[in-house]
Length: 338
Image (cartoon, rainbow, N blue to C red; front, side):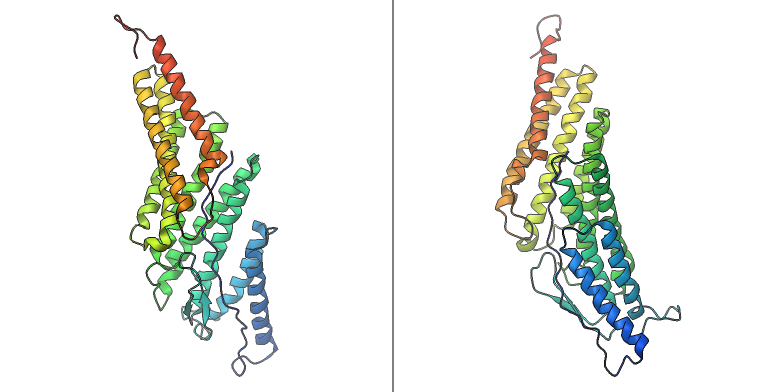
């Protein structure tokens, strides 16, 4: 089953030379600085390389971060920080606030910002793979794995590294805890979308699919609520996506709950559940249009024309018609139920 995911742009950064004349002496130290410069440049290149795969990304990220640790932690493995932590100024833009950069003279800021981009790369890789029309089972597993890795990176940055920043992130900036949490929840929700698609393909019980869909809708609602206090100018498009996915998967939940009710010969209740699914699907369709018209970071697309969206509309329509036909066969002592 093909998927569609909203993606914010990658963060951009200023070049860093790692040249410290008069501070760094000796060939070994110079080599480390050269390796830092080249490994950073390599990692940045891979972010936009469509041929990059998770193994290449992991190797490049591990190479750079292992060297960067020398600017953060003391080499004698004590609890003290490195004397080089504040020697270099780093500049990074934000995914939501355009090309206005944030700058901090702090290697921890660099670690978090670059790690943030690595996590974003995994989400973009998953999105490209999930958007294929004939996605295989192995590819679906790769999408799920990539989203889980991204969620884990975002969570680790939020819990283990952002508290160490000397200068806390400004409101609405990427490194603010609310934004990172929204990314974590979105990754969890999208990974569960893959689980739902697999459950449908394997013809699992409608009750299970309904429960998964309802939980997914709650994930999207939670992510949307996390962003509710941000400026609409740069969060509106992202929030439209979260809102439409919430409506979409709530419609999914009502649709498959209706199938469960139908299997229990509760045709009247099943029809009401499918009618609710119809309303929510129509609401999601309206939100798709609004998403396409909303300015802000993210792609300019029409989600309502995407296969993943149209497919649910057909399922709701066909299931409702089935419920209505079944209802027509059930007689009470006086008349046929309408």
